[in-house]
Length: 275
Image (tube, one colour):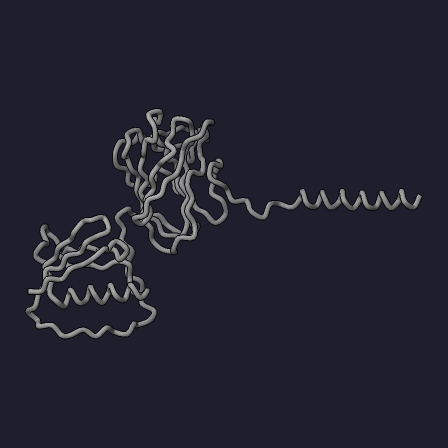
């Protein structure tokens, strides 16, 4: 009898433990690549494909679906010609791409973030909409430029469906050509001492970008030295991410001034030819 009661107690204990374990929600409910994600998860905000801050190039069609829940906000953009792109700039530290998967989709789509190109797949045997196609987290907090390119990985690929993006809840979507503003300085770095240059000394200043493109400017040596000081400070981890070069006599049109912004991480080399 005592053994029977003891067995009942043990059985009741394990049943209670199982119920408790089954009733505890999963600690991690994060979606995985290939999951259907009809709404943004906690910590994310969603921007629909119809947002005016998305820049579409190439051949795209846009459709509305009434009250249908097939696509987010009942709309999508579909690229039908290879090389078509959608570009945007966002402020934040993480990104998700939402679209459709099916057997007629590409498994080698290009996505370029801040000049670095990665790939993702929209191919699947079974078709599904509002799917998490791509995710990148742990980026530096700030502004990021993104371009998604439709690539036909095989002759059977028909199109690419772009539905929405998710970013940080405290992030924001910006114009594709937005340049990050200069941050408010928190500390004044020690000035780099440079030899004084004659006021009439000038130079042909050539900047070679990582893309191979060369930018040539006719500048005073003071302007050249200001650029070099900015570049060396940025290498040490201080200063803004871009530098504005005054185009001076190259200014054309009814503008007070024209400046070209050079991004630090796009610079390969620069050359100074003083005259």
